[in-house]
Length: 110
Image (cartoon, rainbow, N blue to C red; front, side, top):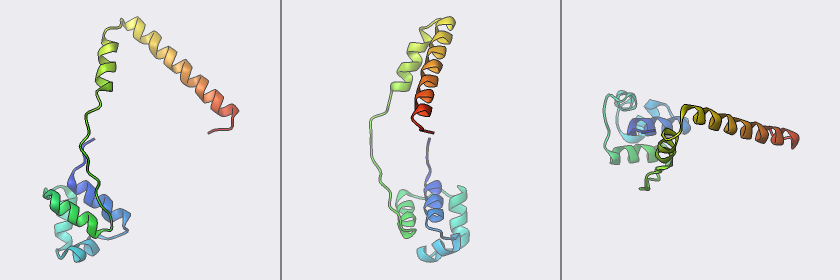
């Protein structure tokens, strides 16, 4: 899921319990500028997003990570199966999940 700067600013502001006007005052801008940013009508630079998030009392932790290719590999393996084999595999997984649910219920786990 892609997250845009406007989503990060809105989330930080809401978590901080700030109104758009309050964040705007901290940032030295207007409420309408914050509203335009949060609605996606403007695309803030990364530095601006970081500044606004920090003014809301939060920080961003940005990392570069290698992509997780496991879904792609699983999809490729499933394409090799016949439709009947796919159904059988899905039923097997469903039985395993049911057994896990039942074991949890016996232990009082919701």
